Image (cartoon, rainbow, N blue to C red; front, top):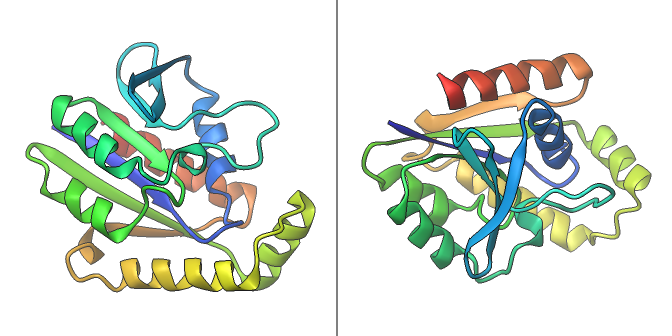
Length: 180
């Protein structure tokens, strides 16, 4: 059975940092199997990651994909059965998660990470974020709606991402679910 692991959380919760840490244990091949869908395939073909992570980029992963990528990502998912992990705002949305949950022979694991307001504000400052208050409130509403979705609720695993210990717990969870 294929596994799809979706990682979400408001900006600043550490999604991209977490994914970079996750990737340290693997080798990847960067490819673009569909127009507008760059991805990274683990060298032993155990899983793929939507998006690309290059050194020095603050916003990587699905944040770098086109706003119109969702239909292309769905098409790719219908054509393959490889395990997938992704993070970021572009595809971590209610309609795409609901779609993933309908795919045959697929287990969707939703991983929602969070941090307190003061920690988020410090992270925004540290990375020089210029995201507006309006945008940040919109992301908060979006994630609250996903967390309240009755169809998705049983699939959601929530984790704080504040300390290195928190990060280790999440990484262990991701690896155990993706590669079990």
